[in-house]
Length: 321
Image 1 (tube, rainbow, N blue to C red):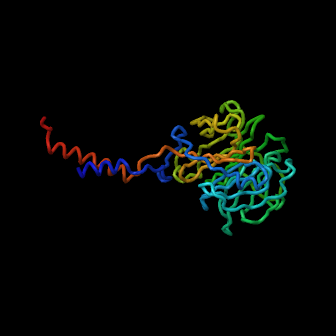
Image 2: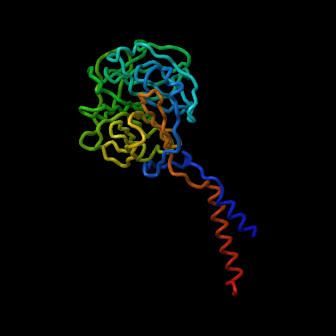
Image 3: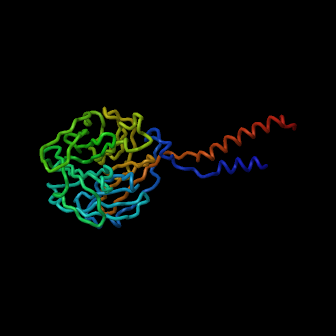
C-alpha cells in the first residue's frame, strides 16, 4: 500500500519546462504557444506599432522598439512594464523606420548596449540603454549597410556573441539574409555584408520580418545549433528554423493566430518570444515553449518505484486464484 502511494505521488508531481541546461537542440515540432502577453497598455504610450523584440541575457528581460522610433521599452518575461528610454531623430521615416533591435551585451561602464536597425536608410545604430532618459539618433554611433531604399529594406538584426558579427534580413524584392562585420562610428561609408543564401529560392515565404541567431542560447554553444537561425515571416505567418545555407529545419505556423507579428527572440531556456505589430494598438507577445517533461527527481522516483514494485512481485510469486 505504501509503495502504491509513493508511485502515485511520483506520477502526480508537476510537469516542468525544459531547463536551459537541458537544451541541446531546437525542434520547432515540440514547441507550443503556452501563453500570450498583452502589452498594449504601455506600448500605446510609444505612439506607434511594436516592430522588434530582443532578449537581454543579463537582466533576463525583453526589450521592444516601435517603428516610429519613439522609445525602447523594457518588459519582464511575464509581460510586465519595467521602464523605457525615449528616442528622437527617427522621423521622418526616411531617416529611420526602426524595424530591428538586438542586444549586444554590456560596455565597460556596465551599461546594457543595443543596436537598432533602421529599415529605409539600411543603417545600424548603437546605443546604451538608460531608463528615463532620451537619446537622439544623431548621437548614436552608426554603421551603414547599403543605400537608401523604400519600405523594403533591413527588417531585422541579430547579434552573434561568438564573434561580434550581425545577421541582418532584408524584407523583400529581393529577400536577403546577410552576415555583417561592422565598425560603429561616424562614417557613412557603406559596409556591405556577405549574402548567406538566396531566400527567395529556398524559404518559400513572401517576406522576412526578423531574425534571431541561436548562439545566444548557452546550452547550444559548441553544437551545430549555435550556427543556425530563427526567421519570422509576417506575410506568410510562420516561424522558420534554418541553417546558414538556407535549409529549412523546422517550421511553426502562425496562420489563424495573427497577421501582424514580425519580431522574434529567444531566451536561455529556449523559450521563444514573438511580438506583433498590431495596428489596432493592442500588440501581444506570443510565448512558445518546448514540450514539457517530468521533473528529473520525479522521473527518477517513478522509475525506482516501478523497479521496486517489480522486485516485490517477483518475491511474492504469482497470485493464486
